[in-house]
Image 1 (tube, rainbow, N blue to C red):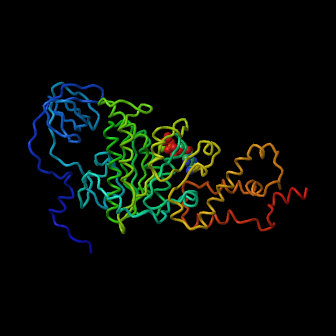
Image 2 (cartoon, rainbow, N blue to C red; image 1 turned 60 degrees about the horizontal axis):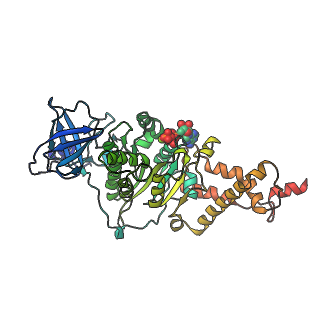
Image 3 (cartoon, rainbow, N blue to C red; image 1 turned 90 degrees about the horizontal axis):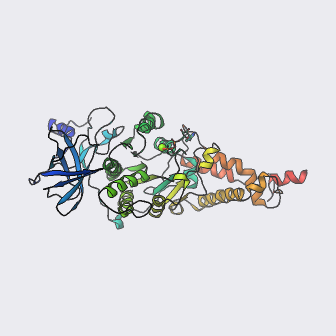
Length: 461
Ligand SMILES: Nc1ncnc2c1ncn2[C@@H]1O[C@H](COP(=O)(O)OP(=O)(O)OP(=O)(O)O)[C@@H](O)[C@H]1O
Ligand SMILES: [Mg+2]
């Protein structure tokens, strides 16, 4: 029987925030507002502190301290600002940022500051989650040693993901990132999925939740959404909140899959903030703080200490113009433990999910699969590469079958290699089936000794 909870504990579940006592602070006044930045004087607050800006008409705007210079304090609004007046009061707020959390949060959609967006009423939860990141001593982190089934055949078999691994999902726009993330949400064997939708089109948020995730996907997922028209601080917060929620479930001993779409928009939000408060741009307009914030965010995923839960994370990285040398893509590749590349060429040929197996790598794979599986993965890649190297010759009929047994096999198996990558949106393929399919695909031809049926056919002519 469910444990009866006292009225006071039930009331606490509804309390939106925990209030911590703080010393009274001096009020400030807004003296300048340029672009996104607000300047105030008369405040004695630290960076990161929440403030409320109170207009003469008593309208309140939530803002955060993002920097200072001499006695001037720079603030950024968390939501969009309208009708701000010179001289508006700035009052430091005495609340600790956080939200209610528990198993009840599954199936909900929240914004970057933990407010519900789905119209299903206030968030209910037994615990209060404060937004300060939890820290794990790197020496205590459990190493990546077990695979995580993501329900996608090509990834399970050829780019096997380990529990606690962090990967990039690199792709240009419209190549199928959202659909692939939706498939993973529905078919993974992870206990909980946290989806961060950061800086994408507002229309896409609803489409993703209603059509791509559907009820089935949403049942064990929490979505944190902050579309492109949100203030940059809100978008930044949404990325951080997704990680924070994932940390909470991990600390409960669960295996969490965190899907963040996109890391590029997170970096762009940080760029907007940093440039607005006067940080100089460095690489392609990105100030140095952006490259410091990416590892800070990504490092929050991973395994907990021995016996604890895990956060396996996919961060999508937009490679605009399909340029893999983008500074964000570069920085992500350096910090992540692997990447899955989606190829526009495959998508154009109608191969979905458009996973470019040759360009993708899971750096943890060799530690989590057996030798046979590893060899099969290498063989698959070899055959694919062999076909691509000879593609031009094959297409004009200049290749003579029987010249090279490997190329013969690559030609014969190529349609099967393609079919192996393809998977329907509504079809989940689990790990054992993925490996069995790979094994069946690479079985040597039964009707010949060392030579392929293609060569045999040619000889017969
Ligand atoms: N597995 C799939 N099967 C069939 N069609 C697909 C598949 N994945 C993607 N598509 C097609 O590609 C289109 C774009 O996919 P999706 O929205 O996932 O791309 P995206 O990379 O998230 O785009 P954006 O950069 O705009 O967010 C879909 O509308 C759909 O038509
Ligand atoms: Mg998308």
